[in-house]
Length: 116
Image (cartoon, rainbow, N blue to C red; front, side, top):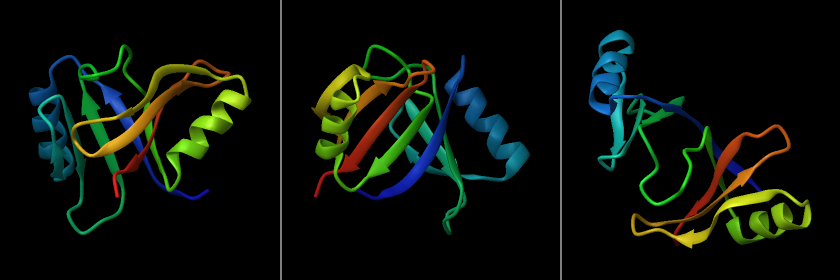
């Protein structure tokens, strides 16, 4: 399995104000905006981070998104490892297949793959 992208997610109280703040301070671009989550970074590539108030389809807000090439395998490994799945393996309407796990330290992580 290959990890192709890791994006931290900051939970904010006011999404639009947070986006404006980070854009002004860091000069970053909006790379993705679904209305409830915004990913910021440099348009040419490199580091990214996301901001959200709450996840639109999941019961908890994750602290990071980890993109893998085989999300079904990752899900199976998480279950075998006895990790708590806090959002089931789901095909989301915005083109990703994902699940959330809670690791041994309590971090909630969004594990995903983009639909082929």
